[in-house]
Length: 111
Length: 114
Image (cartoon, rainbow over all chains, first blue to last red; front, side, top):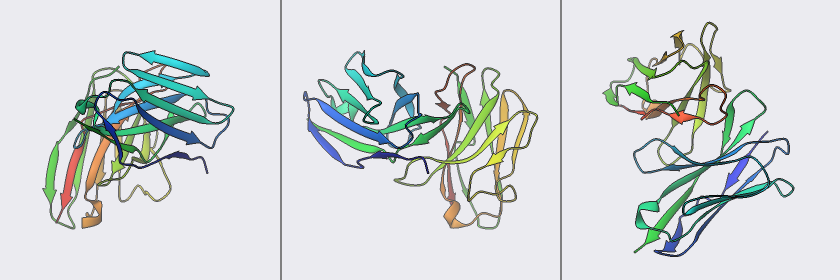
């Protein structure tokens, strides 16, 4: 059974601090990794994708991938109240375009 | 990316009835996915819909309960049949644009069964 695990939270972070979200996956053959943000009552929205080991930065967001340890993380710098949402980690399955989804981490940014 | 619309956006239905949800994409895509998201839960894949072939259902989901149509490369429907309160959920369609492994989601259909 291929699995993706996330801490469900909630993770509470003061405004302006760095929020760190983590995700581990079971399938060592996974090649593609995604972070989605989901606001309450809305559908998931892709914010980051990462395919190779190391860091990938996009604005205030940094995705980190370590395939040897089978984890992927998302850092949000200078956290804003508007970053409060549930963050879903998703991992590709083989080449059939299906994704395995984590349960999501609820992030709360406190003003 | 892809622009995806769903109809209806929400509905309240009586148990025992059926509801058909439509998903329209602004470009041609080979695969479409249908998910269910129950309150406070993550996404559960119901089925994969490929144009020109039968949908492939995940464990726990059957065609009699969730029939799917995929008449062309931009459109699909999911029917929730003989509904019960346990079917109350958000139903989402998603597509991987051609050549991409990621998925883009429609706005969802919020279903409440009384």
